[in-house]
Image (tube, rainbow, N blue to C red):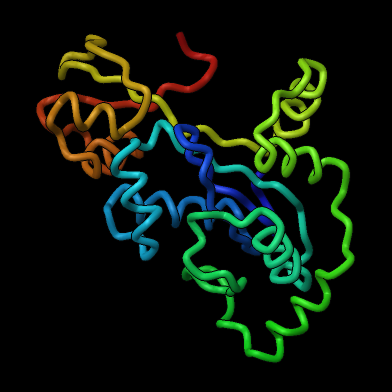
Length: 214
C-alpha cells in the first residue's frame, strides 16, 4: 500500500532510469507527480521530457521503504547516494513538492550525510537495489521473492476504455496517454471523464479499466 510516509521510486520501464523521493503521504505525492506530468507542468524537466517521450504506460510508481516522518530525509538521502538516480537533478534530499516542509539547511544536509555512513539497508532493500544497479540476471526464485515483496507497493498506471455516447465499447488503451494519441482527444479531458468530473469529451465516454475487468 502507498498510504503513509516513506521513500518511493518513479521508474521508466523502457530504460530503467528512475527518480527517488519521499513524502509523509506517498499516495498524495504520487497523485501530485502524475497530475503535473500529465499536464506537462512537472518542475523536473528531465523526468517530464522522458514521460512525454515514452508515455505514461511505461512509468511505474513504487514505494520502496516505509519510513517514519522524522527519518524521511535521512533515508531518501541514503537511496540517492546509493542508487544514483538519473532523474534526480538535485542530489540533496529536500522536503517539498507541495506536500511537506521546507528545504533543509546546510547543517541538516551534513547531518544526513554523516548519518548515512555505515548504515546497512534491509534485505528487501538490498534485493531491490541489486536488481536496479547490477543489471545481472536473477534466478526465477529471486524474481518471485522480489515480486511478492513489491506486490502491495506497486501502482501501475490505469488502462482506459473508450465508449460511444450510447455506451458501446469501442476500444481499450493501455493508458490515458495512448488513448489521447490515438483518439486525438485531450489527455486532461479524458482523465476528467474517467474521474467523473465531466460526462463526455471528444464525442466519447471514457472509463478506467481495472485489473479484474476483461
